[in-house]
Length: 141
Image 1 (tube, helix red, strand yellow):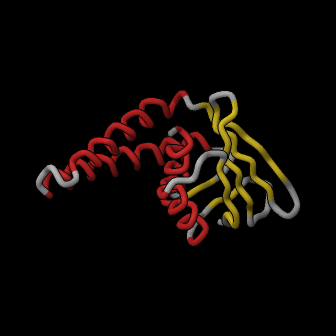
Image 2 (cartoon, rainbow, N blue to C red):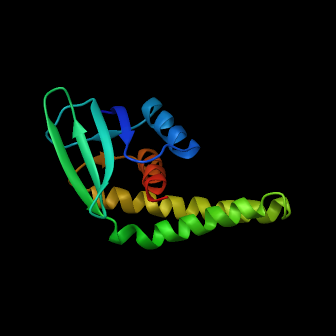
């Protein structure tokens, strides 16, 4: 697989999105059919859709994903992150760990859905999908 060499998002960058971008640039697997990488990726929200603008040295492609299939996962993920933040310092470590395990499970579910929705448009491994899902969450805030 080829890789992403540059990433930008149309959203206010928070710590999570900056870390996800940094992690993505260090280690990712991202391939667009019929376009040779490395790629530059720009993510934006356009008419309640996620726009992926991918460019390489020789070609460009843009594709959009509907937010509809992600709505419930994004809602659940936001709620569990809020619960985790509230629990820290108030609950025993084993409860915090249980909430964090649930958060990771929802995050993985979002990443797998993203992989499915990207099928035929871009091939990504699970770790890349997880980091891209983090950026999608940041864009929804």
